[in-house]
Amino acid sequence: MNRPAQPDRHPGSASGPPARTDDPAAPAVRTRPDASGEPLTEVYDTALLDLDGVVYAGGEAIAHAPETLGAARDGGMHLAYVTNNALRTPEAVAEHLTRLGVPAAPADVITSAQAVARLIAGEVPAGSRVLVVGGEGLRVALRERGLVPVESADDDPAAVVQGYGGPELPWGRLAEAAYAVARGVPWFASNTDLTIPTGRGVAPGNGAAVEVVRIATGTSPRVAGKPLPPMHRETILRTGARRPLVVGDRLDTDIEGAHAGGVAALLVLTGVTTPTALLAAEPRHRPAYVAADLRGLLAAHPEVTDDGGRFACGGWSASVTGGGVLALDGEGADPLDGLRALCAAAWTHAGDQAGTAEADKALARLGL
Image (cartoon, rainbow, N blue to C red):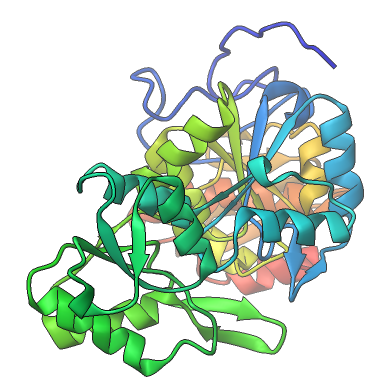
């Protein structure tokens, strides 16, 4: 569906999206979720979707994800899949998504391997050798930039790059990186996520392996992945998005990355972030929108109103008492409306070191 271009609208209005966070007219600190009188698919042209915890978990599709993404795509929204995991190639990721019922082409997938390869290519001459500590995703991304992957510190590399290499990554690969970095070879990392979700639980991520080399060398790498600007730049360059919406489940990568890039974000509660953590979120970790799952893309988002410190949404109202206790009153059809009201109360009073006491009791009323 071809939609006419929409004018920018006032931040937080019920009729449209918030302004970019780098807009001088935008509020410096978000103190409540934003409202949209239209489904988000009608407001934003491109969804920048995280994968683990958003589209799938343990390799299997999350409930409602395939049909929701299909409806968003059929409605004209461009879907891009953005991952900090540098192990797999875009072709492998696209094949996995298609198998789950989420048809995707390799061009729809943006990885931290691509972002770090572009970063390295801007620092070393074309045809340079790069010592790779990671998987095939890194090697393919380097070749795409005209760089030559090598395996040893003795191969005279112009740079070292480190990305998630899977559970079978040999310890000797970390030693090769340490040898080269100790000699002064520039060091890059696709991302520094300390953990990665797996079907069996939480496993050490690339950030844990980066720490090994950092301890051995006493230095730190340049990092490309979320939430840092190189990943955002790579995503925008590859998608051509004009009104992007970041969709993620992690406050410290997805939401912080959106904040750093000056774009809006939708947090879905199908991954690692709990409602309790959302209430305690610092300003750079506060999303514009919150939803139980990806169906939030297809929905309008109600306004949270402020009546003298009592925040109301969908029949629920929340406030912070003089003793710093977060209180929830009323009754509504949608527990997420109650969560939105609680976010407004907690975020508004966060500077007073109040707003999260008794949060669990308020959330229990909502069944969250």
